Length: 302
Image (cartoon, rainbow, N blue to C red; front, side, top):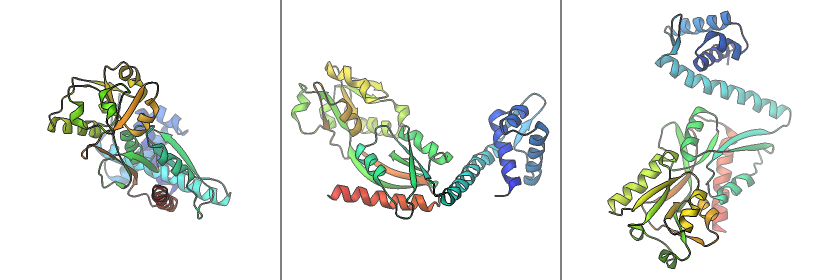
């Protein structure tokens, strides 16, 4: 990447974030006249404006937003390329940025952390936690190299591979009549108070639960929303509600008089995928995904 292209992108990105020439110049440690010149140069090169501005305000226009989105990625990948080269020369760690939900199956996380690569003996995983739906935004923005996400959206910008499938679990008191069953069906939950994760945490998944329930004419007496499965504990413990949770959440609250049973509904299965950007050509990422998928299959077959 040419130095001029880099300074143009840095200037445009900084101005889009600050919407003020003085603050943008200070942010990237150049003078205000220089950031003004950089913007003029890049707009002259493109033949159109990226910002609408007057003496009072600066606003990013549609073309500017499109430029900034790709410029952020270009700067990010440029920095990672430099770091990867330095790591090879210095025999240092190469970082793979991986995101996962805090409620990802522990089996997948332990398998992921155990992966070793002969071609990349010094690679290191930087593991961060975010809700599944937000992981995809971070992936598309370039903050993450790889995400372990439940039901990621279909997009030509994403490459995905399914690595797990599991049911939801229903948490209840051990004295609940449902606990006498080895599994629970949606019909058996009719008329009960349900505890569900908040819709904003994963809108498509939430909507699928409510849609299937409506199609089956299974109506809860009420729905209470939570962010973390631990929040459901006191309401399940007093028998006022049953909770719909994922496997990891079930493991965290199945104690002190509470138990869980799988929800047996073919239309309500949780499918976990590895997801990355389609344009990510990293050899490290490719080798890691292959090794992880093989390790998951081998452990399940054992």
